[in-house]
Image (tube, rainbow, N blue to C red; front, side, top):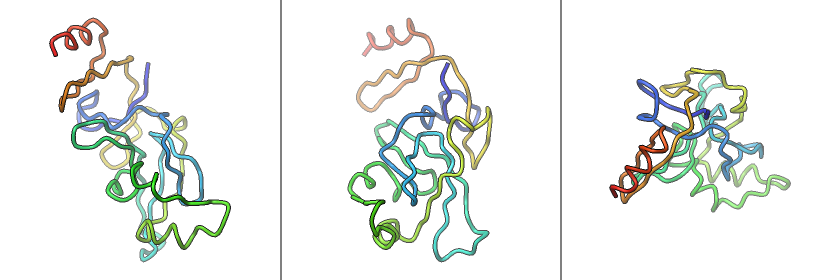
Length: 156
């Protein structure tokens, strides 16, 4: 069994990552982020009540192949984060605010504490049977059955 982030009718059609997958990202305070963690995101120009709660996600498609914070995907993602070179043990705050365009992210819930069907935005956690990812060119299929996955792989 695995826990995933999904949307819509559920299942693999709206797959946004396997919960617990480690990322190379941390929040604004240096806390490591995992796929399925919940973070609060607020811009420095916002009021104290103007924040959002978002999931840390992951996608491996022809369009997106990275981990990211939902709602901040173009800015706070694994590709950008790898280039930031932030030292959390030193005076990093000014550099971080500049890099993140004024966004502050704080981990508020660990993925293991997220309950089944916990909905934030349009994403929620769901437990499913183990699955297999079959990729060919731009096509990615997530299949629950090993025999079906092998048959599809052999078709490619």
